[in-house]
Length: 388
Image (tube, rainbow, N blue to C red; front, side, top):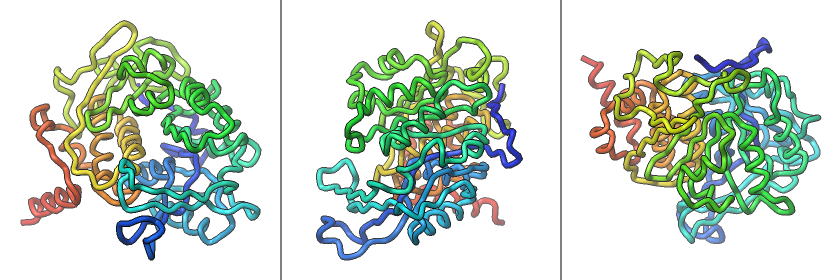
């Protein structure tokens, strides 16, 4: 069984990602924002990060958003489009600016890290059911969303509720919880995020997020107990690994849009990679199967954007109909590419590289240690092997 989606539009794509992207200013040297004399410009946004990663890996992707009719808006559209992302459905708002933010060079996990957002009243915060092209939004096999959008405004929340509501023929809805407590003001953010996650088909959430937002402390199984509705739930466990739960209940409609759990009759692994070893088969329990994949050891440069890269890697492998354990390993490897780079967005590892590392046996996988420049080093080694 494969992912099916509406694809009724002549311009249908693999994935549509909807959400705000901002111009990011990264300091040229470490230090407090008050002391840094200059910054380099980049792009940052959870959904556009996913879109750029998938497009760089060869998938057809559309980014839907709104930006200001200003130079920063021009930059975002041009920079994201340069990855191969379709930006034709991005609206321009002459009355509102494009959001920007500044951050220090240090990792977000440290006390010294600073982020200064200038996104209040941004063009993207005015997205609504009325001013977004819903036909373009629903033209993908997968629609990727995140909880950040819902926090931007009442109009954005209304749009998110529309897109996650049950609807015949809707695309597979992928939802990254992305809990940002600082964005929620007068609304009960955790309750809203739980509501939206329950309406999605595929959900990504960090174990730490689940504890912070919902007070869940019992590990991945407890997260699944609190969130049984999504057909696929991926609980990210930081450097430990990630656990995927897949409902084994049958049925049509939205559930039928998912490739089945590994081992089901309809599963067709790519010929380019191995079929998972017996030790990596999902473990069945009741009406669900559970698969855990450890993360490789990574010499972290910065963690910003790693969750987006994980989601993009998992979605890429899902679009290729790879076995569930391989989807988790793809997520880990794509995340590792971002963890070992200084910016919010890093190029994903080449498909041949990812497939070869994914095919390692458990012992070899657990010995992996990935540091800065690992993707380029592997690709250079491969090139030397191919060159007589």
